[in-house]
Amino acid sequence: MLRSFIFALPIIFALISSCSAGLVTPRAASPFDGQYIDVNFQNNATEWWWVQVGAPAKDGESPPSFHATFYQGYPISVLREASGGNSAPENYIVINGAFPNSTVFAYNLVASASSVTYSGNAVHGSWPGAGSFDNSADLSTFTVTLHSPSVKGTITINSNAPHHYGCNTTTDPANEDEFYTKLGWATSQPGGAASVSVVLDGTPFEFDGQGYHDANWMTQPIDAFMDNWYFVNAQVGPYDLSAVWSHITGSTREFTTGFLQADGVILQNQCSVEGAKADDFSKLTQWGLKFDEPSGVNVFDGLILEYTLANGDLYRFNLTGQSLVLDQPIYHRWVGSAVGGKVGGEQYEGITMYDWLNPSLTPYNG
Ligand SMILES: *[C@@H]1O[C@H](CO)[C@@H](O)[C@H](O)[C@H]1NC(C)=O
Ligand SMILES: *[C@@H]1O[C@H](CO)[C@@H](O)[C@H](O)[C@H]1NC(C)=O
Ligand SMILES: *[C@@H]1O[C@H](CO)[C@@H](O)[C@H](O)[C@H]1NC(C)=O
Ligand SMILES: CC(=O)N[C@H]1CO[C@H](CO)[C@@H](O)[C@@H]1O
Image (cartoon, rainbow, N blue to C red; front, side, top):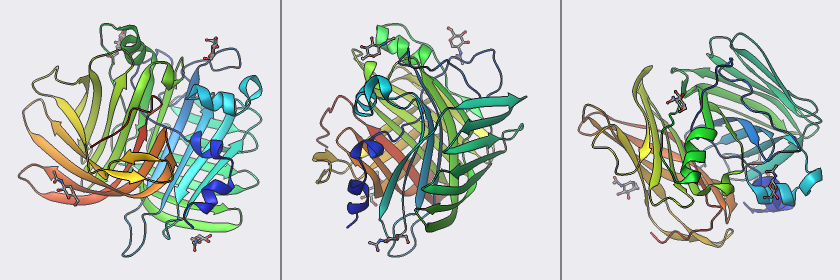
């Protein structure tokens, strides 16, 4: 039942679903949420604007969620091949999510073109035939309008925290360098109150929750330089969290980045290879083990995300997957519950959304 909707659609549409976060080479060019690189039919570059909203599950229900990603190009090379190779659409919006009754949905809204224009830091992205987005000049408000034949409506996020880049320093190997210096990540809205009001093939879907918006760009698809990639976002009491944990192809070290803010104050914004730092680092660890039948691979039940600040303070969050909104051998995405805070301090409950992208199909065995 839960799967019927997603399988009714070409599987590729679900697969083209997005992944987020990465590192940055900040350009002199403004605006913060604008176009950073040139994406065209002749190159393998990709750039995307990602937005997600989720809300805690009510008793006996699943957490409602909605993801929309405005793409130029393809984040994984097999997806371009599967979408038509050289004739694959270059501009499209991927929608994924789940209703409170746990039924998941997926759409691929093909656009005839795309453009990202700006005035100061105010940005307008237009994907004709599919939708558009707007970021306000002060990066306080991000709005999406969808106007495709199948999906219509609006998503709004009111930011509660400062916008930020990641960071970028490394020495070899080559793919590590690619990862640090050519992969960009600009987070405009690290968290904040959000609302979704859409109509999916005539079915209205509305909820209020917590939202997140960032943008990524890279000169090659992810699978050209990464074996896997975990991207985590959570909003828990006064905290907004995000983190990436990735195995870069050919590297012996895991890459990590962590962002943690409370009440508008950044507590951490770091990136490093695992084990390289005595403080100011973050650590992601899976917990649980089960076989996931639809994708045919082992998966984890949740993640522990720990932050060690520069001053030694420790924060720990326990994230539990409740709704599996994307379920493919190389790509899983969960929406669920989060609990945590400062270790020894007040503990809060909240919502998490996290992605496990595994183009190398490296097995998870607990
Ligand atoms: C793009 O990727 C394909 C498949 O991996 C490769 O054959 C092609 O040479 C690449 N093109 C450029 C411009 O890098
Ligand atoms: C779940 O809710 C959606 C939206 O109301 C509806 O379209 C769908 O049919 C429901 N699924 C089941 C299995 O009842
Ligand atoms: C995380 O939460 C799960 C489910 O509630 C629990 O079984 C597990 O012990 C927790 N892990 C930690 C480290 O708190
Ligand atoms: C945020 C950051 O560290 N940016 C640096 C990324 O790398 C380039 C090239 O080494 C530097 O110029 C930036 O300052």
